[in-house]
Image 1 (cartoon, rainbow, N blue to C red):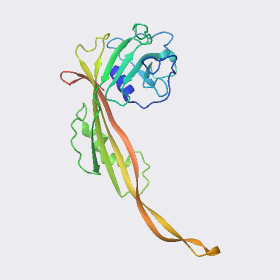
Image 2 (tube, rainbow, N blue to C red):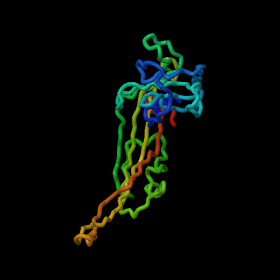
Image 3 (cartoon, rainbow, N blue to C red):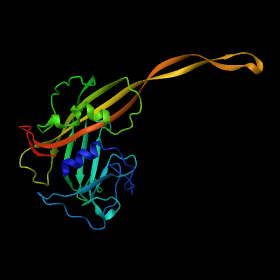
Image 4 (cartoon, rainbow, N blue to C red):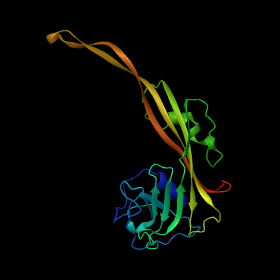
Amino acid sequence: FFAGSLLKAASSTPSFMGALCSCCCGTRDVVPDAPDVIIPDPEEDEQIVVTIDQAAIASRDYLAYRGLGTEDRNERWFFLNKSGSKWGGNVQMEVENFVRGLDPNDENKGQVLWRSDFIDQPFFQQQLRDVGGSMLQFAFTGFVDSMFDRPHYDDGYYISHGGGWDRDYRTSLFLNWNMRTEASLSSTVRKGFGFPVKLVVYAQGTGVARYFEVEEPIYEERGEGENRQQVQVGTRRRWERHEREYVDFVQFAVCDLASGQPVVDQ
């Protein structure tokens, strides 16, 4: 749960829904109202289901609700406090419960169950190629072996995917990319795995650009007075393109800091 929550909150697109700030926010973007009855923390090995939503409009913080909804304030389970750079490279994320008042320097701060520090810029690789062009072997392709079963490697999948390609396309180009980033994971109140771990995030995607030619008539005005009219004297041609972008695969894994091997992956 915690690894997935940190990934979601660090990278998701704002939904512009959630709690409004209830008072002066101090060290956080917002201070959401706590539920009437604080939900106990999950057991160390308990699997839980939560739904994550933006805490307020334009906020970097998020709320984790118990279950699959975000409408009931009393289902708020955790507050995900994001701080640091707004542009990446030095970002912190803390998973807090709603047990507040334990920090003498921040009365609005809940008990921090997990903390994650993103200290590096994500590493990207990309390749622009024609349909059927060979794929470069990326340095890292995720935590599973069956990478060639993914759509990332199937040009035909994208040519027919989604429908709506409605032109006589003359050529198509593919942009295949992947991204890897990682963050430290630490806790002073949860036992964790008994050894230092890190969160590794991997994603890959595909952009498709399909080019077609557009022919337009060229007109000139001919004649005078009432006989003046527009007459086609030629044509001009230009290139246009239709584009689509897909995130093919996202995976995160909690890895042993020393060996780099996954201890939990998804």
